[in-house]
Image (cartoon, rainbow, N blue to C red; front, side, top):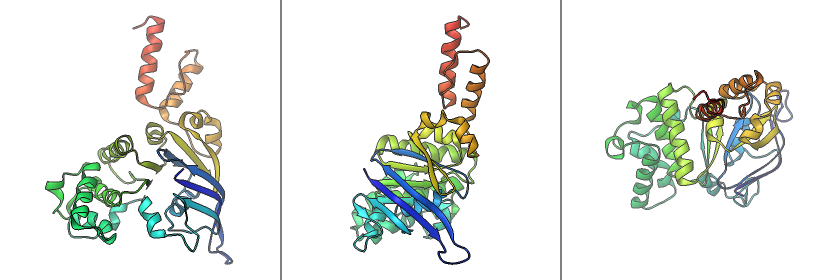
Length: 287
């Protein structure tokens, strides 16, 4: 267990006319090696929740414990928490500020007081992890790069801190299809090759279905559903009640099955659907 949340409540602007309860009695455990998708409507509390995971926000009541550190305790070392949990906000490229890609990615490790060789090693590794050519791009201004490249520089800056948990809040927002695919491909590779625990906030059911192994659903500040990806997407009616949905390909397979075709309608990706349909047609003798 890397993160444990106990009875977490958070209120914005308490004791004012603008008081708003953003999180309502959240209980959650994140295990090392999880790849969690966090979904819910705008205003459901997703961003507020993830900002508690590295101590940017502290609970109004309840606890957030990160690798044994209570973020609201007087003895809680928030600097250590923020090394353990790397948070990538929406449009993280807006936070780029250094004159070169190298300096921007190196900023965090330098602030840790690391030796020059260790900083260099971390920058090079982080750039490799996000698919940026170290030799060609290290001296370039980040502001000269494409939108997708800028975002990868920002993510590399977080990875250079070597977090145990990477939290990504809508990491593909505003990107073109190619940029989206590049970012998502790198995130998947990070999980598969580096074993880093990932929490992905997204409105795209297709992205969630393709990448994560667990889903957390939030609604009006409450955690209303939690479970394995297929288990959650089987509950299409409940998701629809919450104003959410299931992947389009799953919708198609459900409709196809309802018309008398005995196929597996729990598939979540186009690749899974293709295999299932080919196998079904073979069973019928059509292929």
